[in-house]
Image (cartoon, rainbow, N blue to C red; front, side):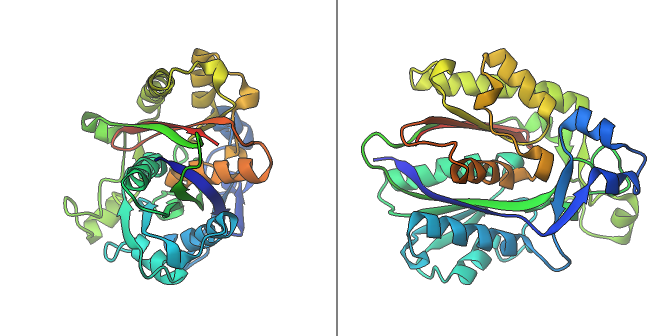
Length: 324
């Protein structure tokens, strides 16, 4: 018994923020942003539009694609670092919106790795007898963004993606997931304030500690190294080679990171799913959003071998291999 992805869904806010718009906000240029990141535009949530609003819409589309009623869900896992509020969990808010009354619900925090982490947890529940698990990655990264910091404000966007996990049929489903973390690298990507360490205060807001901070060069090096290692680990665990992969769905953080990883692996770019040019880095929503686009665009066929990979704050990194 293993979990297969029975349906996917995604949702992005209506507002588009282009690189040209950012040129009017900070000292940057479209050419610089595209060359360094591959991003041309991103979506921004409307005032009052929260992570649960985006996540619920993605979840509804995933349930419809799977042909499964919300009432049949056993568990809802929501990967997010920009939840509606500290309490209750965003998963409970989405459960309420969906009417999934019999489902347990909780949030999982692993930043950009959150969706792959949640898939691993959901797969474990399916393997131990659960019928249907909803996994949602939803983020409003604009709430953490310092729009005066040209090094980070060009990177992030808002969005959501979801997948319904159900028991596999035959050899379909998740072959394995590989989850890693190294807390010694916590300061490479972090939001220092707003929690119990540095509670909200006028001083914190004045210092901008509620915004995301990133050490770009160090993050780049670690990301390339860990993603290559996690990919090779997943392939070895399933006696596969790079040539066996039909599709590679990486976290949509930076085109240079992705190109460096696939070059090291020897994977052709035509097998890589990319949509960061339109959405930027949507953290935990990144992979399910890209995966849903690939599924609905006909790039994923029955029997295909698909690898998902992400890295994020923590520092965390993870990979998963799925037989579609």
